[in-house]
Length: 299
Picture 1 (cartoon, one colour):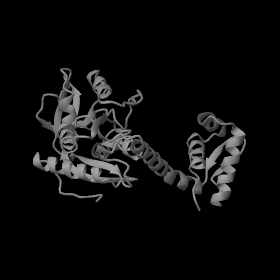
Picture 2 (cartoon, one colour):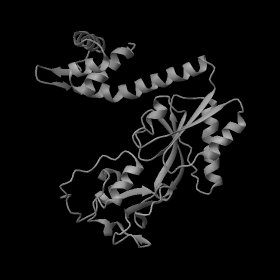
Picture 3 (spheres, one colour):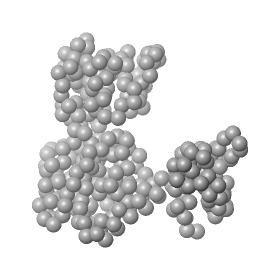
Picture 4 (tube, one colour):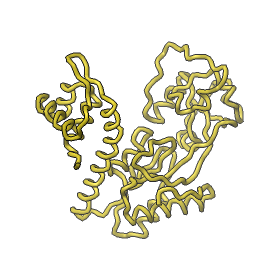
């Protein structure tokens, strides 16, 4: 059967809100219309997607599976629409997304020199959207830092770099050349501990008894502000820590902390020759800089 993308979008809204009224408001449609569309979708799929009563709306097992598969499918459809619109309007553009601390000037210039009629754009991303920009077609390629949700993506490893701990300048460890993770066992990590599983799984690490809630930090600048205020520590790739140098924080090497892997990502259904050319160019640039990886995932 053909999946109706409009009904799929309606389903995702309800699945994320778990409330038909809020989902209808989000979609700018009437709630009875939304309910009818979901019932029709369930009939088409021959599967119950929600268990609902007057008090709650809960996803069934089939609903949970559909939600997992729906997001990359909708992102792929949106990316296709963006690419077709660019082609239809004669806009020959190539957009490179990059994470903080990663410099893409050489690669952007190189692809522009190879294709003088091409408009090359760059866009800065964050851990939250570094992969979504290519899934949704907002960028052709994206320099991503692992870990990343790989669904719908092709990846080419480029290079890795050390991670460091960032501390307040007056911290007792701030003047050391390097530390071990064990020396950080009692420090307060401002990030989600799952981001640094090596620290999270340290033996004898005390439970987080700090009454202050862990802040939601969406940018490097916010992380450094909290570190400078002695609220805790963060773990960052070395290039980010050196790029955002400031006098009230210090970064220290961590001897037993693994490196951060940087990859180039693109939508797995994007078979543009220009993307392929840029992937090879980026890998060559990484090798020329003496930091490249031999991996060729994706092609």
